[in-house]
Image (tube, rainbow over all chains, first blue to last red; front, top):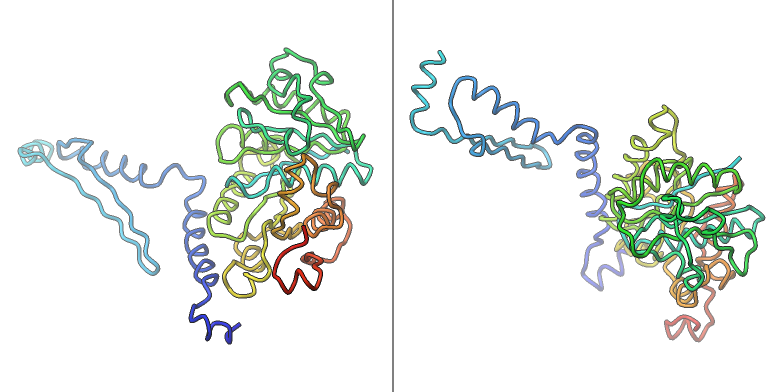
Length: 91
Length: 271
């Protein structure tokens, strides 16, 4: 096999496929059965923040980026001007 | 006791219908009384693969809706007296099937047959859900390729949660059938190996069906591959898988094409 690869100059792709699948399926299995995690996060963040600040539900964006070692959760909430006043009255 | 077996995969084009026809014929040849049920409403093909496309009068939906009685819709195979087909509708849409209706038909088929084999449509929508709903056992047809393995994993999750058995706290017995396997490519590291697939899916193996011209040739003439060319590599693979399904211990091997020397040298298969 390795001799063949010397001639063709191509590395076997199956190990890459195997590794990608293992990482992907570990994630997918952990999310299975739960209602869409991102949707749920978005709803709950929206509920907490809107208790204190007036905001437009359409301007709340939740993104997830899954890396090999670290994953990031990005929450982007756009506050309309005048949110301070709402904040003050709530507090 | 009757076994309801679903042949499923998630992904399309991996060989569900070929497998349903081949396993149905192999079980019937072994003396079991078998009905194969096509759940692919709107895109039926099991009738074509079995060579019964010109004999379809009534279908599964007609029976579910009470338009036809079950015996009127069942088509007996002309070659194997133990093999019957319940075709899908070609015209109705897939919402025409209801859970209760399918349950009643399966219940009635259980009274007559040893095996009720449900050929699932691709996808994870209603048709696929209903095909697996009442299953006791499942064959998950998988190609050694990333998208097929991923979809199989998803289907395994559904078999463990969405079936009647799962809801009653029982298990659906699951088996992986690897199809379109190319031993040469796997050895060169170009294709996921059997070990890779089994390790990732953590489900026992029922058999390995090699990629073969014989499968296409069999569907061209409308005859299950186990019947059309019994000595071919895929037919032997399906036959072994059938014996394992009946509980026999059969050594796992990958059947290979028996090539003549000239064909081997020229790198082509015997026609």
